[in-house]
Image 1: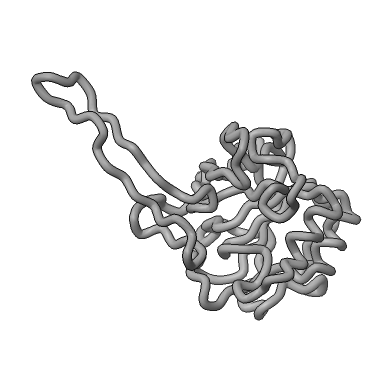
Image 2: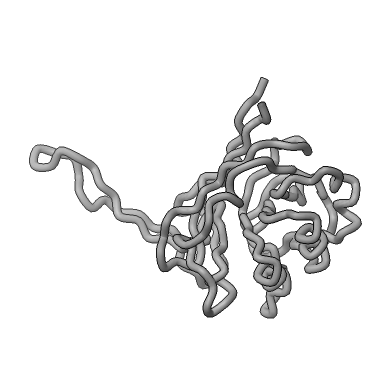
Length: 207
């Protein structure tokens, strides 16, 4: 019986980022050899690379940075809801079948195979986030690059997160995860001045 699902995409030079954002790059800083006992790499990346947690600083000038975020929203009971093929926006009616006894964390699977591409993907309708907040949800996640459509400049979903003090995980991989309840573990790094943080997101079967 399976007990752990890794819901993080690979992070390497192929990881997609928002057009114009910093692509992943890596080089050898120290090289193992006769004069050096270790290999050490230097990496450059956007904090929005791979599975990541947006901090309020990403969409509010005076918002908290990643390193200031409380960890509790990123650890605990979680529900995975399937809305495969829901269209451009996850609307409240797409979730109604799965809202009873809802835990404080909700991840939505929108497609058969997760995408990091920015050309076309499903995002959250602001009304859906308001509904979830009203039901006590403190964190939402999605298997696409953003909770807002790729073409959005107003970012209404992000501002719903801000209004309701919710947290978010983006770029998750839920391809092999059945709908149901799990334990989520997806802790952001203590990056004290960053507007987001990569996470190694996993789900564990509930005991």
